Amino acid sequence: MERRVTLTEEVSEDKPPSRILPAADRPATRLKAPRQESDDAIDGDRWSDWRWQMRNRIRSIVQLRQHLELSELPPGINEATARFPMAIAPYYASLIRCADDSDPVYRMAVPQVQELFDPPFLRDDPLEEDCDTPVPGLVHRYPDRALLIATSTCAMYCRHCTRKRVAGMRETCITSLQLRQATAYIAAHPEIRDVIISGGDPFTLATDALERIVAAVRAVPSVEIIRIGSRTPVTLPMRVTDELVSMLSSYHPLWVNTHFNHPNEITPEAAVACARLVNAGIPVGNQCVLLKGVNDSPQVMEELCRGLVRMRVRPYYMFQCDLVRGVEHFRTPLSRGMEIMEYLRGRLSGLAIPTFVVDAPGGGGKLPVLPSYVVSSSPTHTVLRNSEGMLVSYPEPRSGGYDSPRPAEVEMPTVHELLSGAATRILPASSARHRRRATRASGRAEQSESA
Image (tube, rainbow, N blue to C red; front, side):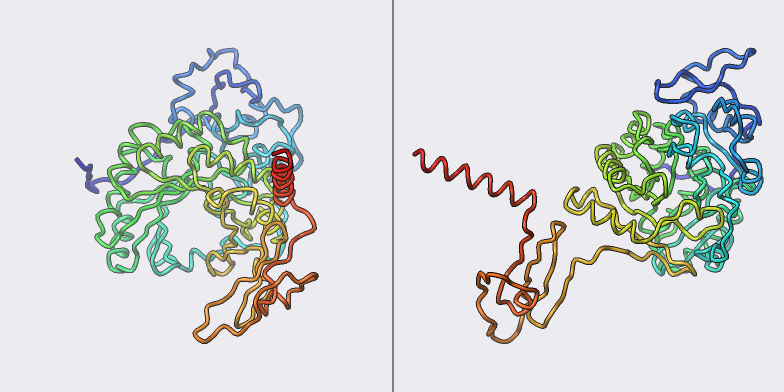
């Protein structure tokens, strides 16, 4: 039987106290919060309680210094935290292996003085979401889909967040009135078939509060697909409970997009959270952000993608970092993203390769940025290249006769011969694939001679 609820009250959140309790023992590769003399060790049940994690997020410099056992504070951290608030769930803080900027998890979670660097081309709202907001909490940029902001609360405030202008400034959630206004707008625009529920992080809401939002969206007849964007599988995996998954699975077709950025975030707890979703028939995609000093290495990105598909999470997007105030130190050249995509192609299956996109400033939307595999084209042939550097001639369909020369093994073919159809390919001098072929051919020849 499908679950359905009515909108009878305003969505509320579980307000966290200001004090953090010590974390339970974690694997040796993770830092642990120091024990306070008056506290008993946190048992596994409390550590695994997502509400406890939310109440005990690291919100202050004092808590951070105690948790990470910092002998001295990084320069400018007080100023950065005052400008852009901090919140780190104890679980996610436990993934920090080295309490300095060399650690990718630390870099994504802990405020840094570089966030105060403010070049003139950065904006609070570079995607101009506010300009595409017809009613409070709803962004309508693309014709067939809309983004519903359910809450401004997160388990961890990412230092690279595209909504730093609101993240942590005031932890609020959508009211019943705002939700009615949003769903009325969606119903009045039946071209909207896909609604993304985002934030903040919708999974930080209580299950019944989140269900009121999902049910309201599902009640709009023209909505075909609901997607929920949540980073809790990464930052607070204990939130993905059987209760939550059971509720979500009542509103199919429903998808979840999450946000793993580094292999260190792929933990046994994260794998369990993703498995619960996938096993309930909820497809999970990943939208990572290309971040300098975190994942801007081709090898790191390959390891991340392989880890994701092992968890049955589809690498969906690799985003170029947005032109947001406070994130300049994370930005990489576009050429770096293209280099990574060039590296992944041929090393990973297509299932494991994300699409590299730039969310264009000014509300231009997501634009794919890819290495070019089209070398040249003519009316009769297109020359393509593969990841090995091999050039191939692809014959185009023609309504008339085929009067081009029959392909031949030209001794030194050029792109011109490929364009005219006089040759079919230009091989690199050597590649791993061709070496394997040569080895197999040599082995067959030896077997034939011995026979």
